[in-house]
Length: 122
Image 1 (spheres, rainbow, N blue to C red):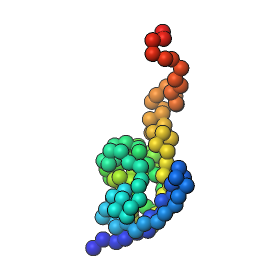
Image 2 (cartoon, rainbow, N blue to C red):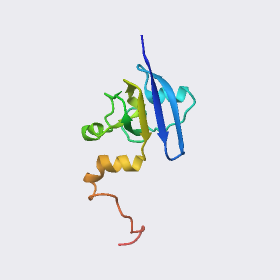
Image 3 (cartoon, helix red, strand yellow):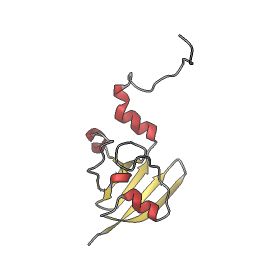
Image 4 (cartoon, rainbow, N blue to C red):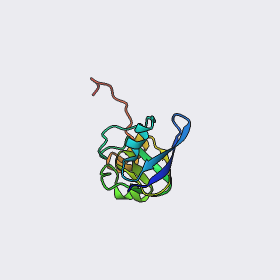
């Protein structure tokens, strides 16, 4: 028998905050969609950072979140497309670019790429 948890989601980009009831045996993203909420997502399989959130409190189980390093998971980041609620939660939707930078920035010329050349320039 599944248990429902209260999940509060802060979406600063849209300036909204809402709560949902999420069963512990459904992905949080899927549950939110069933309740009429549009959350950012792309791959739906835990491989990208589009649906990333910062956990403000509570516990999430995300065994399939291969798009996040163990370090980011330890810092409280999660991917809602492959996350199950294990308690009542409060999460904050993150900017994908920020999470991507945290995840991969150290591998790419020490930070954000600065564009300056146009096609055809040497």
